[in-house]
Image (cartoon, rainbow, N blue to C red):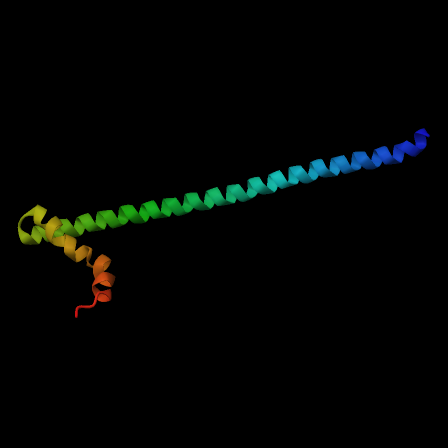
Length: 99
């Protein structure tokens, strides 16, 4: 009777090992996907920050240049604002109808 129970016990042991291995594989695949996502987001965030700083520096430079042309440094920031931000409001001006 001991020999008859051994194949069944071996089958259960193999099924248990298979389920543990499958669970471990699932965990490792989930960690791999999360690592890919986090690294992708980190690169996108870094590129966004570089672009934002570049844009900020360019806008300040243009405002200072306009202020130099106008004779007062602060005038470049006030006068340059409508010029630099005109692209922001263009769709609103085009979409409103005046009857």
